[in-house]
Length: 381
Image (tube, rainbow, N blue to C red; front, side, top):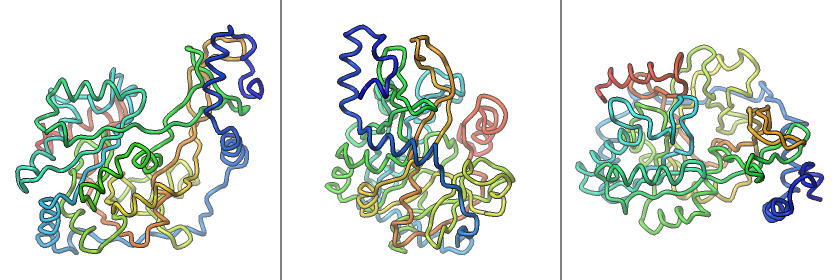
């Protein structure tokens, strides 16, 4: 019954009740209840005895020229695409708009990555298809930004936008939250929703129709990312992997997940779920850079991914219809929960310099200042 989920319902005008009725009908309340109980009320804790360090290779062990040649040949044949996760806003940077529109000396994060795709296109004489996952909160702004900047010199028909999926936010009592517009509050369902979103948006079918076999995935906020790094691409193709991941040696206490073997299966243990201090025992930090076979993407799209809890201050209407900003429950999927379904998975550990510089905060660590310094050091601006 809707009043069990939305206690303010009867305080609302009829037009708002009708709107909420329609939204409520689209929800799977059995799933929402199960997620609330399993993830918030009865969370499972990480069994540290089940976790072991993941095997990895380093660039020094590899035949770089040979692997890069493999990558360039695959690019020239149109077999390689790039998948960008860009669903976030620049709120923590005090930047109005999608995070990808944040700029250094007039060059946005989107432009910095587009320039790398343009360079590959000039080298191999074939465009790399670019698939960009946005969210409801930034989709239209992102499209307009690309249009206003002439798609950074890339052909618009080679850039494909699709939206991240969502899941309801809840109060700690397990009730649905309603926002100030009196809508049921939905929040992005985490980066693990990317596989289902690829399939439901038709992007996975688009990849297959183009003969794309290998997909490089990265986040928008790693300012020095080597998009479609030929070494990683070549390693992935040569070994016929379903998944190939990049890692770095994490700093003590660093807020990155750890690539690990969990009960013998490849996975990532998120830093928020590790007991304090335990993460430092594992030496492969996950930096959100992976290669996937399209066959694996198809398999992962049909996997029922678990949800994880994120406690966030959310602006919503309380039981008396007053707008408040209080801690609520967001539930997110993590893409790496699909890794255990990969038959073949390798990890390439690289140096941090020139590979990983996340832009998360306005000041302090992983900030505008550190990102600017690293971009300058790498000659990217």
